[in-house]
Image (cartoon, rainbow, N blue to C red; front, side, top):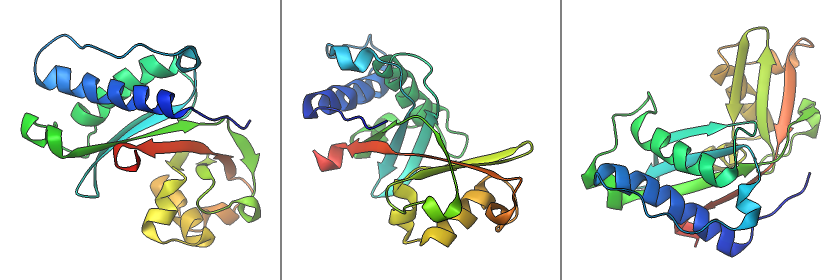
Length: 183
């Protein structure tokens, strides 16, 4: 499914994410921008936080859970305060964060040769193991397709070449990715 967001919808989502985080840090009731109709649709999404270009938090849902605008409110706080890889975001860090949002397409069963670096994100599954990397990760890391596949295997807790195993399921998705630095 091809989908897009208007520039105004992107701005509303970014402002919503920042307000969600800042209102919690400042211990006040949030004052969210008004949502446009298109933002009420359920879509998979991720909120990623960076400070000085380095990951500071990332939480999301591959599959739709609730209206996109509502999901962004929750995921922004989760990324800032509940990503187990990082300490809770501090008020001092609030002005330093750059918020990036990824809105995901539905998942498609795929094969290694069909994956396009920079376009597709990957979900790798085999038994109880699964791992996800968003479309922007291999580009940010300078990975080719094989490195992208191997690193997704590693993230899933499997051997680097698990993508060659016929029992490993590979699903791809695309994403509309935008952030405060790009606007």
